[in-house]
Length: 230
Image 1 (cartoon, rainbow, N blue to C red):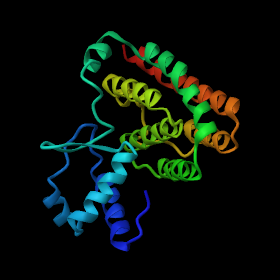
Image 2: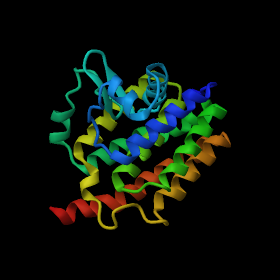
Image 3: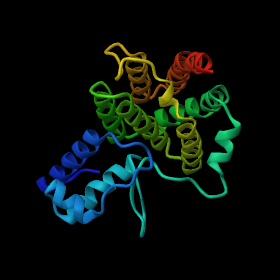
């Protein structure tokens, strides 16, 4: 979503900066709109447009009467995320991702628009500037959801959101070693670029293969950390 008015663009920039500085964990509730408007120095209308952009990116979710929260939001009540997360482990979770996400990348290569590609590249650029693992992981989540959205399949997107909610409950971030933020040569930077390049090139098989390689790399780095911690 693009803003035509400078005030709308300013509100989005201000809101991004606000969230970046606070590095809030998933499901944290943001201050009320009136307070946010005063803090950011923007109008309520522009704030709501900015929140709508972040919601479309999966960075925040809103519940009428309760407020705005960090993350992509809860999934339907019939899926009990906490119960599933309590019975699973990182290895099973990665196997599930390896089944679903390469196919989402394949579909994204078929259906992604130029705006989708531009949003993915913007998000990739931001991951390289992340000042903490939590900030990186938030942006990483946004990128993977952008790919899922680009597949243009509501059912598959719902499955991705369900799996992502379980992934957050497992709390991968606690497994991170030093340093405090991703190193300059972090493996995901190049792997993400290969995925998005293949999507832009309409290379269906290449996009699926690049996503599979990336997830296998993630598993190779994180699961040994989990085993060492246990």
